[in-house]
Length: 127
Image 1 (cartoon, one colour):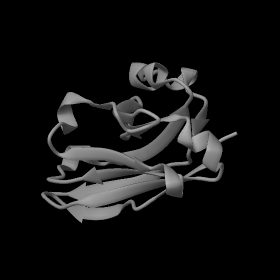
Image 2 (cartoon, rainbow, N blue to C red; image 1 turned 60 degrees about the vertical axis):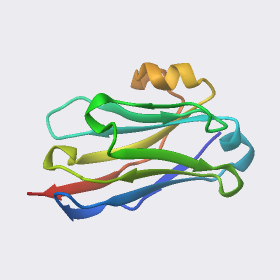
Image 3 (cartoon, rainbow, N blue to C red; image 1 turned 30 degrees about the vertical axis):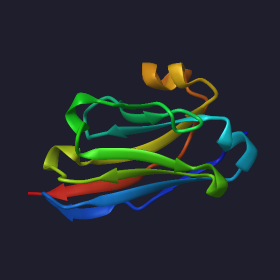
């Protein structure tokens, strides 16, 4: 079991930055899990934003956030991060972190295939 809790969401102006954190209750399981950051805007489907392999050697970003968002992890702290810079109003969404044993599964981005989810944190970018 991997219990995930997101934090760091809030209101930011366009061009600003936020850092989301995803803390896992199970340290050993976290350190062997790939992590993903998803978001869901009102009226839209949930989409994969970024992913990181268990050891951080591999990362993935959706085109719309490349060069602006960075994902990282600290396995000693059982925490994953999503640094969001140069934010745009279209980044407004509920952001979820997710964990799965398979990096390939996370990158495939199918929510129904991913084992563990946080409850989400709201990010609002004002224009």
